[in-house]
Length: 312
Image (cartoon, rainbow, N blue to C red):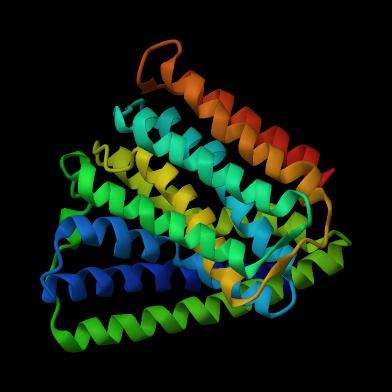
C-alpha cells in the first residue's frame, strides 16, 4: 500500500512539475522573443516529455535500466493504444497530410533505429544515444525549414508573458517537483515490483508508462471536451519520436542502458513496432485521413491484449 502511495504521489508531482515547467518555458521564450514555431517544436515538446526524461535518467543512474527502457517503450504503446484510443472514442479526428509525409515515417525510422541498436546486444551504448539525438536535431531542423505553415499554435491561452520572478519561481518549483516526483515514483515502482514478485520491466511498461502518459491523456480529454482539436495524431506521434530520440538518446549518453529482463527484447519492442505500424492502415480505412470510434476500439483492444499478455 505504501509503495502504491509513493507511485501516486510521484506521478502527481511529475504532472504538476511538468505543467509549471511548461508555463515558465513558454514565458521565458516570449521574454527572449523566440519565434512561436521554435517554442512549439522544441521547448514545449521537451517540457511535455520531461516526466519520461527525468524518470528514465534517474532509473538508469540508480541501477534500474529496465525501468528506464520499460517506461519509454510502454509510454509509446500507451500514447497510441490508450491516449489516442480514448481521444477518438470521445470524438473523431481528422488527420493532416503531414502524418504520412513526415510524422509516421519519422516515428517508424526512430522505432526501427532504437530496436536495431538494442536487439542484438541488449545495450544502448553512448555512441548510439548520440546518433539518436543527432537524428532528433536533423528532424527538428527539417520541420523548422519545410513545415512552418503546417504548425498551429496549440495553446494560445498559455502565451502569457509572466513577470521575471514568476518565471524563475515556476522554473525552480517545476524542476524540483519533477525531480522529487521521479524519486518517489521510482522508489514506489521498485518496491511494488519486489513485493508483487514481478520484474522492474513489468512495472515500467504498465504502471510507470501509463503514469508518465497522463499529461498527454489529460490534454486530449480537455481538448475534446472544449470541442477543440488541439490534440491531434501529430502531437502523440511527436511525443513518441521525442521519447525514443530525446529521452533514450540523452539517458544513454549519460549512462549506457543494459537490458536485464529479456522480455523487453522478446515481447515489448515488437508490441511497440506493431501498434506504431497499425496506425497507418487505421488512418486510411475505412475513411481516408480520419480516425473514428471503431479505430479507437481496435487500438484499445490492442493495448488491453498487450497489458494482459505482458502481466501474465
